[in-house]
Amino acid sequence: MSRIADKLAALRAEKRKALIIYITAGAPDMATTLAAVQAAEQAGADIIELGIPFSDPMADGPVIQKAAMLSLKSGTNMAKIAALVREIRQHSDIPLAAMAYMNSILNFGEEAFATSFREAGLDGLIIPDLPSEEAAEMDEICQRNGLDLIQFIAPTTNVARISQVCRNARGFIYCISTTGVTGVRKVDYSGIGRVMNEVRKHTDVPLAIGFGIGTPEAAKAAAQYADAVIVGSAVMQNLMDEGVPSVRVLVQSIRQALDERMK
Image (cartoon, rainbow, N blue to C red; front, side, top):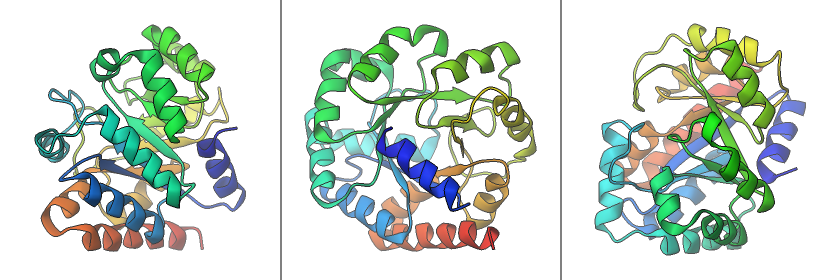
């Protein structure tokens, strides 16, 4: 099992919900990213999702797009992100997943990406623009290198596609709460909740809800359907506006809300 699977299994045994925190690598610089990762872990994050910046991020809302532009302007590249992963690993065993668009991986080389990032200490890979029907080659590369290739479902996912996604699922399944791009907004999680009920007929792989979660209240609402919640835009907004201490406060508040829900 991977670090991701181990962590989620341990939390499930404790009847606790996992908190996955997204942080754009290099926004505004690598030192700040490292400090934010460390602060998030200390505040109660269970898994860190490191965003690899891309110039045309189709799934990202304005906050993550702004973070990506800041990161690219600071000179972020794959080698620097791999070095960041190695630096994190010197201090922590927290599970790490990278969120990257397929063009970034192709430009680096799929095998080279998987090999170098696994050696650096990465555990999983999230590729939002890679449909499950076209993921066989990348999935094989990830399996060969011990990386969990995270699969997606959305409120519009039909039963046939759910079955296909579940056959290949490892680590966790990323459940998109609503159509559209990332960003904090009010979401009715019952729609994706109904799809997740169908998913659970096909797999025991943990389910994580992302998109729209930016407050303790939203995290609690999403957690009633999921094994984990993913928080990204709110984290990056706080980081860019107020710095690392604000990230710590936000993560602490969401961690507390998730734990209170279980009492």
